[in-house]
Amino acid sequence: MKKLIKKVMETRKILVTGSAGFMGSWIADTLVKMGNEVYGIDNLSGGNIENNSGDYELFTIDLAVASQVERVIKKVKPEIIFHLASCAREGASQFQPLYVTQTNFQAFMNLIEPAIKHGLNKLCLFSSMAVYGSQEPPFDERMPCIPEDIYGINKAAMEHTTEVLADVHEFDYAILRPHNVMGERQCLTDKFRNVIAIFMNRIMRNEPLYIYGDGEQIRAFSYIEDSLPCYVKCIENDINGEIINIGGMKPISINHLADLVCEAMDVPKDYPRVYLPPRPREVKEAWCKWDKSVNHLRYEEKVGYEEGILRMAEWAKKKCPQEWTDEKMPLENDKMPETWR
Ligand SMILES: NC(=O)c1ccc[n+]([C@@H]2O[C@H](COP(=O)([O-])OP(=O)(O)OC[C@H]3O[C@@H](n4cnc5c(N)ncnc54)[C@H](O)[C@@H]3O)[C@@H](O)[C@H]2O)c1
Image 1 (spheres, helix red, strand yellow):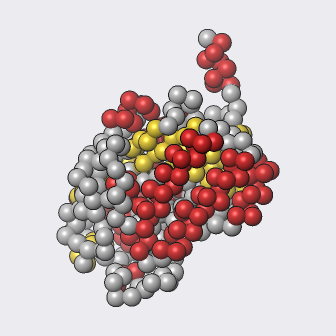
Image 2 (cartoon, rainbow, N blue to C red):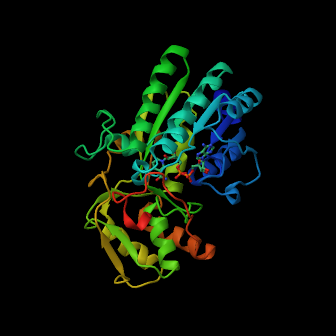
């Protein structure tokens, strides 16, 4: 009993990078509620200051700038880091490879070196199922990393770097590979990522849904509140040295997803859809095994993706139609989908 009370009462100093983003903000708020001393880092490139509850200190710095990161780490000296900050544009990463690498791998290196120097105890690294590439699904954590795109290459490099540095410098780690997560607070304005958010914003703007290829690509979607307990459970000492897929227990096609989003957004299923050529290097089928998340982190789909889409739609409707972020890619050419130019 004494041990249990100690475990519940224990306050840890935790840094969450990407804390103004979708998943990072949910995680930071939950860690605060659990009684931890929480700090956030975000440069607001993909997140939104509205996602910041104000219950913890937010450093608005760019992780790609080493001197800024060193200054914050020296001040905070985090015991645990949840590293989520990223430019998570998988398809578009072929058209801005330098930026995606600076804000993923380079940013991670800028973070991990001072963190180790200042006493890092544990790293919870948010990777992606993009590391599996086009191997035969369901993806199992023991499969090799054979990413198809620049984003996946960056995530695989961060995973490998974590394993090497954790071994040498003796800190604990958990590597999480979440599945297509959605829910309230997800960015609705980025035309390069988050298919559900894009569909919702397009419907609110009376624009047709763009579907790349035949729409029979298979993915598995998960709702943030189902995955959240697993993410924060990673601070526990017995979760160490593991790579774990989280979320998405039921694979569905993008066409079926479009039906569900139309229903949730109160438009008929025959709402206009435009079928476009497949995007370069897009994986046709991507879904994972989830047994390890159930065994190690007690993953459960209490809400599920169907109800999750309904909840997100209610939230999106209140946000109203949003302007798309206007951004030019450095490698904008005829290889790039026309819808992105
Ligand atoms: N959402 C998903 O479906 C999903 C699936 C698999 C993996 N992931 C991973 O989970 C993490 C969080 O994803 P998300 O969906 O919450 O994304 P998000 O874009 O909402 O959050 C990422 C945050 O990082 C911040 N950021 C980006 N570059 C930065 C930099 N250089 N310095 C400081 N802050 C920076 C952004 O402003 C943003 O707020 C990412 O690492 C992503 O790769 C997400």
